[in-house]
Structures are given as structure tokens and as C-alpha cells.
Amino acid sequence: MKPLYEFKHILIELTNACTHTCSNCSRFCGHHTKPFYMDWDTFKNAVDSLEGWPRIVGLMGGEPTMHPQFERFTKYAQDIHPMRYNIGGGAKPTKNLSKYIEDANYLKAYLVNKIQGVGLWTSVSANYYKHYELIQDTFVYQCINDHTAVSMHAPWFLPRAEFGIPDDEWIELRDKCWWQTSFGSPSITPKGAFFCEVAAAMDMLFDGPGGWKVEKNWWQRGPEDFKEQLKWCELCSAPLVTEARDANEEIDDVSTDMYNKLIEIGSPKAKTGKIKIHDIKSKQEVEIKPRLETFLYQTDNSVRFTSKNKSLYPKRVCGVLWTNNKIELNTNELDDVTVIDKNHTERFIELAKYIRKEVDWIVLMDNTIELPKDFRHKLSEIVFNPGTFHIINDNVSMFNVNASALKNTGFASITRINNLDEFKNLWNADKQVALNEHLLPIDIDDIELWKKEFIKKGISNFPFTNIPIDKLVIKNRVKPMIDEILAKDIPRLQKIEQLNAIDIQLNNPELLCLEITKAIDILLDKPEATCEDSSMTSIS
Image (cartoon, rainbow, N blue to C red):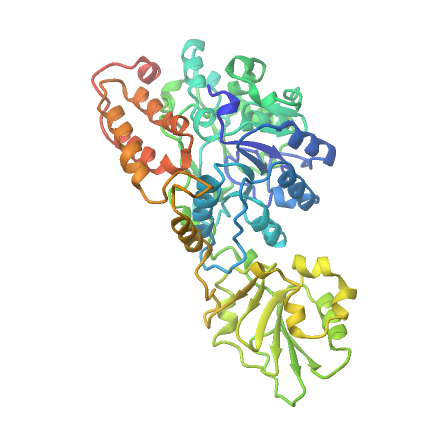
């Protein structure tokens, strides 16, 4: 098993409330009779306990953005565990949020910040939209999945006892669990700290004794300290190869014994029949062997957020027309339009009142009602940051009433503004974005801007990283290591273990992830080598 101090993330579980009840959820959402919401003192202690932790502190759920104190929690976590270099980003609109976040994670989180800072695990719901500006400003890393595309979730509740797996075979399987060693994270819940996030979720669901005391240096434990928490592994089928199910089916795969346990605790999901019971009498009835690869429930990161999820697109878009002329209004593109006399001495009082009345986006039109062609349709295809002031052209701009610039200014101060330029400058310069006729940024996007900065500053003198942004590091350092491992006359499982160890040697796991995954795929596509591997054949 993997020591806690070698993980990339430690997760703080803010809540197990969620907008989804996915199949085989690792937090068992849908089974709780009442969700928990971590209180402030518990959260503060969790964050403080990670003093000295060198990598990502993740906010997790359930859906963490549903927590009523999400903003307060986020700001505190960022204050205590800031990213090394905040290079900004996220203010500009995008048509492909998934690709943007994937690229930002690579450049901002891994290259620049060496996976240090605060991360967010989220299903990108309406609450994400509510906190969109804060999220882009704060989190160095985001793991998103809105579940509008297929996501394959493997079962948790098919315990080894019902397969008849003896202790000696089980211990080897358990200690090489793919989730604990490759994919999962240690976790903090209101009941303590855990070596595994799934064990933490089981303890919460089944009202277990809790975890370790959340105190300074708790995360420096190794496998020799896991003993009292390993009992949760007895209920867990993560180390076993089993069929996965699309998360959107909202059906959990469980054994007979685990079904009975769920009924005992009053699981709403079990009571409503969203369960597939597997009556397992022996291990021969289901293919079981050590899971070799990290289980990728989605192979295409571009579908982590799709246009099927409407929660991030503008919903209500209203207009304010500044004019001293008579203009015939055409409101087909807008939900409402109000006219304010440009020469009126109290025109910004009227604007402030309108801002207080509205709930989403306002388009400011200075003596014109001409909007870009297909304006509303274009809005429906682009994700805009509600914290940004968008300059569409010389006479038209757009902002969201929930922008922090407006909240921080306050109603009274807005009423004392004298002109539109002064109003625009309530937003910081990096949150004033000029758009083209397609409502996309005139300037290059964040990713290209960051790359240009890397090149302009020069790799050798660039203070953020000594890792080239081209693929030379892959060619000159990683490829030879991978080729050497693949050529060894050793069992396949040992090769995979050595491949997965490369990220620790070079201390930059995500840069290597793609190449290592390719190498593992090559191994998995080939027949096993002739040399015997007892850990591979013991329960086949």
C-alpha cells in the first residue's frame, strides 16, 4: 500500500449531499437518510492539520459547491494553502470548458505550481455557476465531471468474503488495490482522517468508529499505521476486477449481504429498488483477478462538461439602453429592456436599482439596440465568467449582477458613479475582456498566453518551472526509462508497478501520465510473459 505522504491530493469532504445519485458512487450518494455538512470548526481544523503538506488540498463531496459555507471555506483554504504562483486565468469566455480546464490543470497546476494549492472535485451544477468566479480565481486544479456523458463506475459492495477468497490471497489483492495505490486519496470527514476516501465514506455510511484524530502531521502515516482502518477493505471490491456500469443508470451493484446492510441503515436507494443484487456463491461465478490498470471511467476528457449541461450558460439576459433619442425597441434577443435617459442626473441610481432587481446578465447598450447577429444563440453555446465585464463593442457590453466587483462596491457606491467608463473600471483590468463578433475573446486565450510567456521568459531563467513545455523531457528522460522497463524479463505486474513509480522519481506525475498510460496499455494488450507471477494467477 501507498504511504499517505506520497499522494498527489488529500481530500476534505465538505458534504455527502449531491445533485446526482450515480451508479456505484464512491461516496454512496443516495444511500444516506440525511446528508452531513461539515461545520466551520471541523473544516478549519482539517485545513490547519495539513500544514506542511506539499501538494493539493482538495475540496470534495458529494457536491462541495452545495455547502452553504462554500465561499468561506474556499477562501480560508486558499489563504492557508495558496498556489505558489497565481498566474490568473478563467476570466475569458470559452466554448470548450472541459478542454480549458484540462489544459489549465496541466500548465497551471502541474508545470507552474507543482501540484501545490487548493483543488476542487465537482459535478458542475448550478452551484458551480453561482461560485464560478470564485472557483476560477481560487483553485489551482479542478476535477470536473458533469455526468452528461457516459462514465463507467465499478462496484464497491461485492466483498471478498462472499467470493470465498481466503486470507492469504485477499491480503495480496488488498495491498495492491488500484484505488489506494494509483487513483484515490486520503480523506478527512467530520469523523476523522482516513487512509482511503472510500473507507472514509463507508465509515460515514455505516456509522463506524471514525478515523484518526485530525492533527498536525497525521498525513505522515505509512501502511504500517493503517491496520485499524483496513476492516473497511473487507466490504470493498475495489481490488477486484468486476464489470462497470454507466453512472447515469443510477443503479448500484451489491452482494446479498451488502444489500441487507443497506436495508438495515434505511438506504433510500435500496428501498426504491435502485440496486442490482449479485447472488455470489463462489469466486468462480465472477471473474476476479488483481486489477492491473488504473480504472479510467472516462477515456475522453473533452466530455467532462458538455453542452447538455445548461447550468453554466446565461439564463436570463436583460438590457439597459442608455439613450436620449427615441429608439424603437426590439427585445427578441433579450428577456427585458429598460431605457435610461443618458442625461438624467440619477441615471446610475436607476442602473443600481435594475441591478438589484435582476438575477443574471445585463447588457448595457449605449445609444444603440444593435446586437451581434444571433446574439442569444451564441450566448447559449459559450460559458461566460459571471465575474467578468465583457466588452462586446464600443457601444455594447455585458456583465452579471452577481460579479464580485459589484458586491464589493456596494449599492450606494454604484449610485455615485458618473459615467460608463467609471462603472466598467469597477472590474480589475484582468476581468475586463474585449470580445469579437462571435462573443469570444479578441486576445489569445489563457493557455496560449501562458505558453508564450514560458517561451518568452526562457526555460532556464523562468522562475516557475525547469520543465520544458515542449516534449523534450518526454523524449530524453521518460522514454528511455519506459523502454528499459518494457524490455525487462519480469512479470507484467512488476513492469506496471515500475512504470507507475516513474512519477515519484521525477516528481511530476501528470506530465508523464499519458506516456505511462500508453505503455501500460501496450502491456495489457499483449499476452502475459512466460515467467510465472503468483500474484497474477493466485485466484484466476
